[in-house]
Image (cartoon, rainbow, N blue to C red; front, side, top):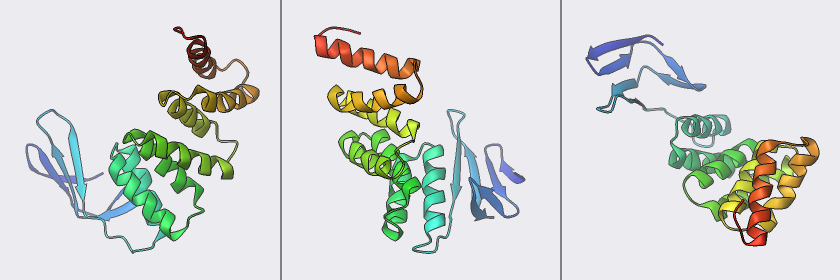
Length: 171
C-alpha cells in the first residue's frame, strides 16, 4: 500500500486504496500512536442502502476490532436486506464482543436458522449461553458440533464446564 510519509508518525495515501475490499480513495491517513499501534482513518463515502458496501464495512470494522462500527454497519445492511445471513453473523458477533450477550444469542439463533451447518456460529452461541450461565441452552449446540466433529476438544471442554456446573462443582 503506497503511502507518503508526512512526519515521523503520520502517512497519507497518494493514490486510491482498498481496505478489506472497501475503496477508500486517497482520503486514507495512518497515524502511529504513542503505544506503537497504528490508527487508520479514512472518510469512506457510502451510498445509502448499498448492501454490499454496508456489509463490507461491517466486516472490515469487525476485523479491525471496531465492534461498535461493525454493529452499526451490519444493522444498516440488515435494514436493506433483513435476510442477509452474513450481515446477521457480523451483527451477532459484534453484539457479543460489545457485551450485549443476551441480544447476541437471538441474532445467532436467527443466523443459524438460515445456516444451521455453521460450526463457528454454534461455538460462538454456545459460549454466549455458557457466559450467561445457561448451559442447558449451550448443550444442544455443542452436541451438534460433536456429531459433526467427534472428539472436538473445544466442544468437549465446554460440555465439561456445563457438566461441572450441573454437578455444582468445577470442571
